[in-house]
Length: 269
Image (cartoon, rainbow, N blue to C red; front, side):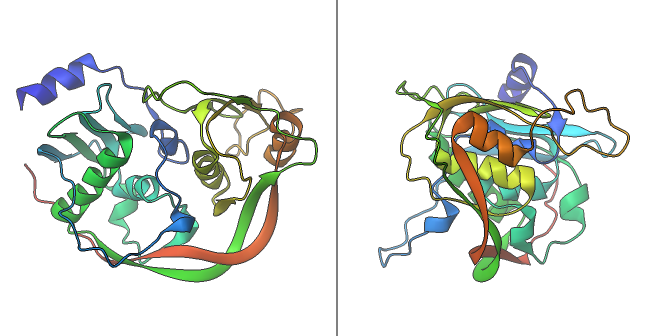
């Protein structure tokens, strides 16, 4: 595993709280709200060529998950499995059922190498296969009527800059409490970002295709006793309208819920 040591030493890692910011490190997947089943023959799932899974530091505060430059290596540093599942399947906590306690608490060091440079979607599929193989992860999905938020265009019009540049596999959203800087962000991905911020399912109904750049500043909900450096900043809902020309509408609708049928701790490498 010399390649793993070299990569871990050479990569620049940023640590974050477990939720909700983990999602910002990955390129978007197909929308969970538009899953389509076909009768096409099942094909062999994509898989990493080699992977290392080891227990993490139980006393650590933060962690990260991201593909490394080049599209060949994926790391998950000191994270529980739960935020990884939320990230890979584009879900928020409210869309999970049957979660065992250790999924939220036990941390893992995961490093995996693809057989060849791959795009983000394929790397995500490989990571799903890793969860199925190493953690024996099994689930089914149910559509349930739940409160959700719909992301729509505001009457004021779009205030984001369209980005036509090619995909460089950079982190789409750089986030700190109360400020998000987006570069080449799809609305599908932005809906996931908002879902994690608000812990409510968010569906993209903007009708906007392509990718956008923006800066969004708002007054975040902070833990009791934490200092809010910009208490006069608008709420997230107001900031979306004023700064990006978007709005969030509360509604009830069908939301996919992942029901975990089985998952277990992996054997150590």
